[in-house]
Image 1 (cartoon, rainbow, N blue to C red):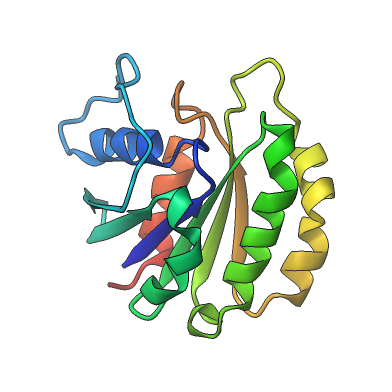
Image 2: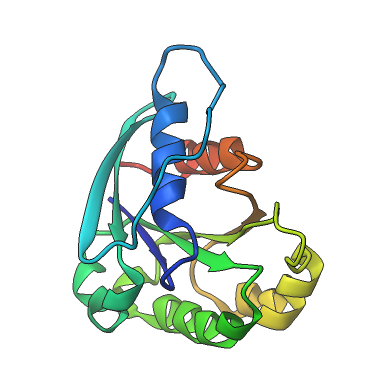
Length: 172
C-alpha cells in the first residue's frame, strides 16, 4: 500500500485521477481536461495498474493530518505532495514531511516528495523549494530512500515519472 499525503489543496485527488487515467492500458496518453475535484474528507482508495503490478494508493485528506499515523503500519511507500505555488503553506508542509519521515513505522518506506503546480506563473522553482525544505539535509539524514520530483497534475507534466517511481519502488 502506498500513502498519498499532503496539506489540503495541494492536488492529491487530481494527481490520483490523472495517474489512474494514465495507468489504464489503452495506449492513450491524452489526459484531456482536468477533472473537477473536491477536497478529500476522509480517505480515497485508488487502484493503479502499472507495468509490473497493481498497486493501491490511499489518499488521506489534508485535514486528517492528526490521524495520519494510524495509517502508517501497512504502508511500504509514501507520496508526499507540496503546493509549490502556495508560499504560506510551505513551512507547515515541511514540518508535516519531517513528522512523516520520523515516524517509526515508515523508517524503511520509500518516499516520493512531489512539488506540484509547476504550471502556475507564481510557483517557486524546484531549486527554491529544495532550498527552503533543506532537502539535501533531509535526504542525508533520513533512514528511508527519498526521491523528489516537480510536476503539474493539471497539465500532466511529470506524471510518467511518478508512475515509473511507483512501478520501480513498490513490492506489493
